[in-house]
Amino acid sequence: MSIAILELIFMEKNMETYSEEQVDQILRYALAKRTNGQNLTKQQIYEIASDMGVSEADFLASVQEWQSTQAVRKEQLEFDKYKKKSLQANVLKYAIVNSFLVALNLSTSGSIGWAIYPLLFWGLGVALDTWVAYQPESEEYEKQFQKWLRKQKRDQLTAQITDKLTSSLEEWLK
Image (tube, rainbow, N blue to C red; front, top):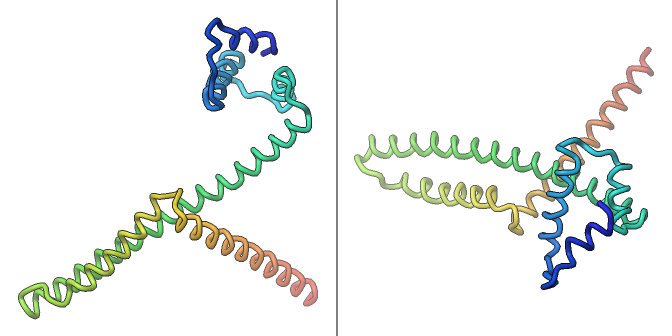
């Protein structure tokens, strides 16, 4: 799409203005029509950006930022999967243990007496975990994500060191 076409789009009598999001959507529609759903090469994307007046340095910086954002997004998706699996396990434990406690309490005293306390307090914990798992914009979610990320990197480093030590030891023993 050339600059002339963009100028024609935006030069109307009433000089409408568009937000960044609206411009993004308009350009996405135009690009979708141009490519017919086919993937573009990095060079083709650069040519389009160049036609729009984007410098090579800005383009390369944007590509790098996009790649970094995609890596973080992939990690967040893995974390979300981990959180939801962990939450399911916690809900299952909660249901099993508290069912047993309520049944025990009912069979011994005929009413729910003391069993209500673990039911309520543990239930509060499960509810808070559920809230955090489904609120990715919250501060607590971000703290848990960062903690999980550090653990993942630590585990990965530990595995690499262990593999290296194991292979070195095997080599030495030969």
